[in-house]
Every structure is written in structure tokens, then in C-alpha cells.
Image (cartoon, rainbow, N blue to C red; front, side, top):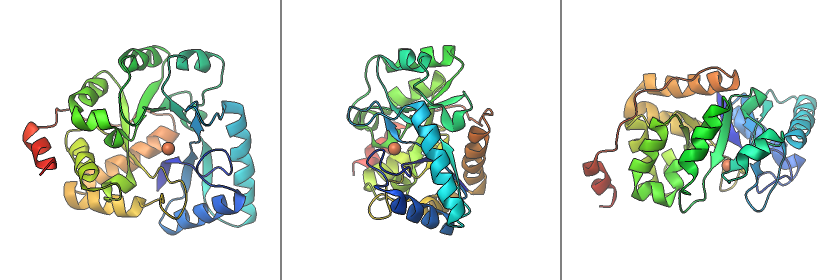
Length: 256
Ligand code: FE
């Protein structure tokens, strides 16, 4: 299993505090069947800055340690970019790192409460650069929960999205779990990842999420998500179904 979103690099953001914690996280990941992890430290979020070159170096260092510890998990480089008006400029300056450095997929983090007005234009501009933007954890964005049509429009215009395993497992509450499942049903999401920060309150839960997805939607959908993670790290085109609008009836059900 591949986990494409994880804060496993030591002491770079609010994820693993030190190398020992990174090693423990890798060990726990391996135990639930994860053999490849894309390390995606926060970047440009007002608190943390992790530029491309620094991440590439730190990933190499962590892989060296995991080898010494005999843990069969490979770390690949990635980055979680906070959306900003300067993102294209930063990309041109080589500060932005695509997932597994393939030059294709880029993680975009929205502020948790809203969707900035320039999001649609940025998504267009990134695609003009030959990139595929992936909106991370849309299921935890307050504006998208209220107005899922906004996400539908962004996906229709070429954005991919990634939901969090813990959201599917219900760890962020019933409303977010329901919205996550609605996103899967409406073909509005293309990846499931852990966004793990530690082993206490923000852990992997990938096995649990996939179990739930298989139970709710069948094994084909589960394998589509798993295969998309593989295609992503190889820099290949992922599978996408035609996006649909989330039916209103379902939304009302969410607030019962
Ligand atoms: Fe994250």
C-alpha cells in the first residue's frame, strides 16, 4: 500500500518531532501494510517553510536511517503547499516540489475555513504549466462542506482531490465522514491518504479507511484508489470518473 500524504519527516513541521518518532511512524505504517510513503511537509502555510531542495535532502537521510533499522518502508519526496497568489512564482523559482519529484502532481492546501477567490484561476494556471493540482482534504474545508458545488466546479475544471483516511474512519466526526463518503460516491475524489502527523491522535488508519470503502462501495473502488496512488508516484495519469454534483437530499441527511 502507498500513502501519498504524510508528515513523517523529522522536525520540519507539526508532524514527527524527531528521528525516533519518524522511525516509529514508519514501523507502524509497515505493520498495516504501507510500504511506500510520500513525505509531504507543510510549505508556505505561514508557520512552516520547506523548500524543494531541503525536502529532497531530508528524505534521503530518513531512508538511510530506515535501512539501518531494517524497516522495509521507502520514503518518497513531496510537499503540501498552502495555496497563495505567489505559488506560480515559487514554482518558477524551483521552491515547489511535485509529488515524488515527477513534475506532474502538486498538493494544494486550502485554508480550513474557506476557498479563496483566486483558487480557480490558480488551478487553471498550474495546469497550463503541465501540472495536475490535487486539493488535499476537501472534506475538512468548512466552505466546501457548506457548498460542495464549489468542489464539483474545481474537479470539473481538472483538479484532483485527496481525502483523509481518518475522515473516512470517522475520527473527525460524523458530518465529515458522511461528506467524505458523498465525495467518493459523486466521483469528486481520487486519492485516500493518511495525512498522519504522529501515532497518538493523527495516525495512519489507511487499513481501516480501505475496509470501510470496500464495504460501502465494493472492492473495485478500493482498488481504484490504491492504483491511483501507484500511478501518481510513477507520474502517470490517474483514473477519473465523470464528476457529479452531490445530491441535495443527501446533504440534508448530513445535518440530521
Ligand atoms: Fe497534511
